[in-house]
Length: 84
Image (cartoon, rainbow, N blue to C red):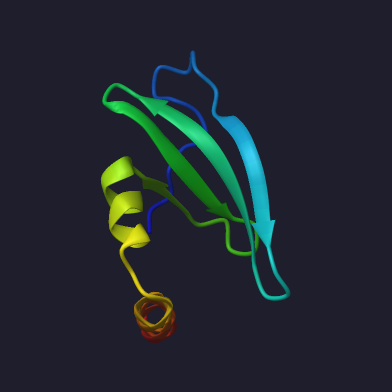
């Protein structure tokens, strides 16, 4: 994950809020972020403040994951964050 700015580098375009996804243990703001290479989804954890940009290639790859594979991916990321 990275700490992406909430507006474009030029400062002229603002991110467009799309929705907020939450459950009992997490809440994430989803924004549309425009770049010189197209649009990305900007995901911002409301708990940690961490953020990441996802492009269509990443989203397409996520669509191919089974629920079990997605769970394993999340577990690995959580364990990695806990050890750093």
